[in-house]
Each structure stands twice: as structure tokens, then as C-alpha cells.
Length: 622
Image (cartoon, rainbow, N blue to C red; front, top):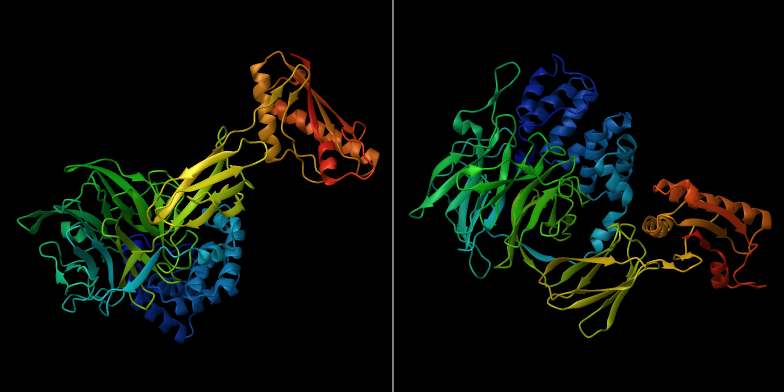
């Protein structure tokens, strides 16, 4: 049922493979009305009559995808990929369904096909950067312990929120007296409430008075003082809708409404002015100070299907919605935002790297760091979503269809911290890979040693409420010591900025740290550029300075080969300096091969060879 709030109002046939025609007309109407159960049945009848082409196959696959019938979706996506079609989204959705069924090897193959067709897509780039990410996710320390809620029904229950007065608000399709939705043949959604007891149990749920309508209602968010509610419902409440092309059908949008509590009762249900019949807004979450409302929407200006947005709130005045950007959103769907009192954002995504379906992610909006998958057991291969966290009570509630229907789950934090160290240059702010990181506990005992990855990151599972020290070193940089204060359960980011070692300027030369080239190559590496940028800074400081760059090799290899290699490296160095705006009259270079060894030796050690492989920057004029 939760996919109603992800795809309702913007399901669009992407890359139609054949075409609609008179035979598919009735089934297409059902699909376009988001009645996917009936639509799938209608398309199946066509196949039974012998009419089956790629268009029908795709509509069947997408119908099952939209209601998360993974087995049937896989069956029909498999037929499509056999035809080697050029619709990239088919391969992506197929991979998502395979992951949901735990078939990770086959999912990886389909993602590789997606990468070939859409190499510049953010999802493709993320996959290419770490195609084996699942092993890392499975190795993460569990952040929460999970148990099933005792108020679940045999229908969809999701979108729960625990307030400080121990009221749990949640959305459910359990009301059998309600009209049935064509989406999944369940009753329309209502907002319910229950009391959270200290032993973790919940009282019998009751309908929330005065906010439920004849349409879908919920999820909702409540202000910190308990007097304001923002709730999702349908634009039909305000007689607003969009008509189908043939003018015979009406389509609602999901709207956000505000209600206020007076004398213990909710009233004055009013549509927000930021609603529009051109797109939907749903799944609200209000900040602790009541000044920022987060929500999900497919409004224009986003990065993909559905994105996370925010809008400023001042009484009954609302600002212009702002997209949370690419650190949160992707070309896929991000939805169900929840903002904690500490400004931590939890949300669900089906496009960031996860276990399959929707996964729950967290992002620290105080630091602007990248969103992090919170791992198992909250996340599974199924849809895991609508994660809310009452940090003062240390109780989270989230939703999942891991048992076949959307249910509520209680999550309690396990005391521990995921410490993420980000190593960057203090001058360029660029990530530093292969930096050595030593982790010491509050007794100054070494507990871990490793290196930063190519993104300058490394993570460590440490105990909560303890002080840790991170000693970081990298050749060419001053050593750095960074302290993580005693932290509560969760994720903590440690930004380790290393100061580059400054060049030594003598009367004769500018001395830099060693400049390394790849074996048998002469192109400037990232490390070499970092050092040469220091020389550029010196030459800008001394505008009359003229430099002669000398490149040397070790004594391994033939003389002529070494001479040619050093000459190429010297000229690459000169060209790099010129590319940074230094006049070509102020820089020249020459390769000397092994003709000027710093250490002459018959059987040189690796260290001696390294000292002979060097660059010198002589000052011709200062």
C-alpha cells in the first residue's frame, strides 16, 4: 500500500516497447488509474488469448513491480531482457526485484546491463564505484534490535509516529467497512492512534476523530507541542483533480492538510497553499521548532521520480519548497522523511545502494554528510520504510512488507557508534585516499589500524559514550590528531583535515615532497598534482622566480629508456605548471635519467632506488 504514496499521480509508461492499441485499451485504462491488480489480470487474459508482445509484458512487469509482487515481476522482466531491449529502467527494476528475492548475483548482472545503457546515471555511477557494496552492508554492526508490533492487522499498517505524550499515530487499511481501493484491493486508508506503554506494548487502536475523510488519509506528523497535525489526504476533498485524456476518469493528487487540536480534539482541516493539481505532496514531517516541514513530492525541479523536499513554516505562511539535493535524492524515489529533534533525517530510497526494494537511510543535516544505509535488521530485501525515531524515548517505529504485508515494527537502538572518518586536504578540501588511520580508545590503547578508501573514508564500530582519538598520517601532509567526544548511539562523522607539508625554499631550490609517477608512465597523478600545486603557490608568491625542473630515475632499466622516461616526466611537470597559469618563460625542465644518482650503489635497496627516483626544482632566478 505504501507505493500509493510513491507512485500515485506520476506513473508514466517509460520507453514503451510496442504501442497501445484497441486490444490493450481496457487494461491500459486500469493501469492508468493505478488499479494494478485488475490491470495485471486484464493483461494476463490477453496473453492467454495469444496476444503477447513486449508492451504487454512490460505492463505486466510494471504492474507487479508497483504492488511489490516480486516473483511475478521477475517472471515478466525476465521475458523482456531476453529480447535485449534498450530500455535501461527495465534492467534497473529487474535488478531491484531480484535483490528483493535475495538473488544478488543475478541482480548484479542486470545492474551491469543498466550501467551500459545509462553510464552517466547517478545509480549507475554509484554501482560502478562499489559493485560489491552488499558485503560491506552485511558486515555493519546492527544499530537497532527489532521486534514486530502487537497492533498489526492482516491489512496494510504503516507510517507510525510516537509522540512525547506516548501516542502512536499510524496509517492502516484495516477498516473493512471502507470502500476498497483498486490499487491493491484493500480498504481505503485511515489514520489511527494507540497508546504506547512502558513495556513496549500498544493499546487497542482507535480511529483519529475529525481528520479522516472518505478518501485515503495518512500518514501524519505532529508538532512538538502536540497542537498541530500535518496529514496526507487526497485533492478530491477540495474538489480538485485531473481528468484523463478521454475526460471519462478523474485522478486525485495527494495533498498535505493541516489540523489543529482544541480542547483535546482535532479540527480545522485545511489544505496547504503549496499543494497543486500538477503533482503530489505527501508523507510530512515537522521539525522540532515547527519552522520547517519536510515532505516527499514529484513536483518539477526534482532529481527523479519522487524526492525529499522542505518548506519554511511561519504560522499559516509557507515559503517556496526546496529540494534537499543530490546527497539525499536520486533519479529514483526517495520518500517517507522523518526529522528528529537532533536534525537527523531518516528516509527511504529504492535507488541508493541497499538490500532491495526500499531501504531506510539516515543523514545528518547538521554536517551535510552523505546519507548512510542503516543496515540490517531494519533493512531487508523487501520494502523497509517510514522510519520514525523518538530519540528522547529511544524508540523507533518503522514499516516493512518483509512478511508479505505492510506491518509495523518496533526498533530500539543498540548502544554503539558507527564512527566515519573523512580524510581531506585542509587546503583543497579534496579527499585523501590511503591515509593511515590509527584508532585509540580512552585509555590510549590502539584498537584499530586501517587506511582511507578512494573517497577518503573509513568507518569504525566503536562503543557509545566513550572518547576516541584518531591519529591520521599521509606522506606529504602534517600528521593530524582528531578526537571524537563521547557519543550516543548512532553515526558520528569525524572530519580529518590534514595540512599539506609546506615546501622548503632555499637559495638554490624549492624542496617538495616526492612526486610519484605510475610505473612506466609520465602522466601527472593526483598525488603529484597536490605537490606541484605547492610549487605553483610559491611561484605566485615570488612573481620573478624562474624554475628549472630536473627529473631523475633509479638505475634499474636501460640507460636510454630511463633517459627518455625522465624527459617525458619532466615535460609533463612543466606542462602542468603552465596549465596553472604560470608563464612558460618561468618554467623549464629536463630529464636526466640515471646520470645523476643521489645514491650510487651496486645492489640498491628499494629505499635507495626510491631516493634516486626524484624531481628537483632549481631556482634559476628568485
